[in-house]
Image 1 (tube, rainbow, N blue to C red):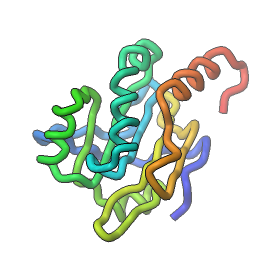
Image 2 (image 1 turned 120 degrees about the horizontal axis):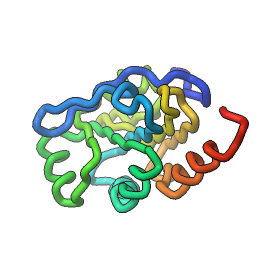
Image 3 (image 1 turned 120 degrees about the vertical axis):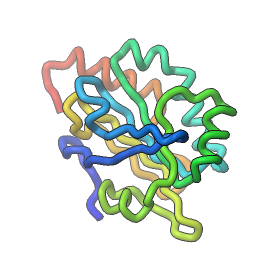
Image 4 (image 1 turned 30 degrees about the vertical axis):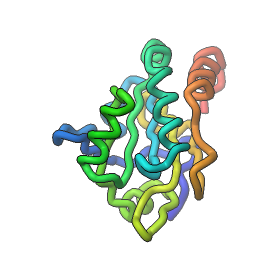
Length: 161
């Protein structure tokens, strides 16, 4: 399972949201920068805080042309309740096939019970990886301010990754 590095194409993944709406990544982010977050589950307080931070920064991220999507192995009901409880308005997918996601992206997993370890990607407007952040636990995460700074710096720099 190779890790995704800067310049790699992000693999095609589908986030299924509560209610059945789907988001095809990276296509749904085409023309915009994208952030893809894999999180351990609604039970992980570090993950909750990361997702809430992205929600609090949603206005700044949108103004910078950055779209966000997240995914966990939680079931649909848990994801719906979690999304409502914290007022998350960006796409939150549920029911991730952790083995398939790991094979496609290199994300680390826990198998008993199966869940994705914290993983984050920043994608360029054509769907290539700019930054990948892998963790084997709950800490070591992308944060909105770093994503905003990266995108701003890319806009000012003549050198592209």
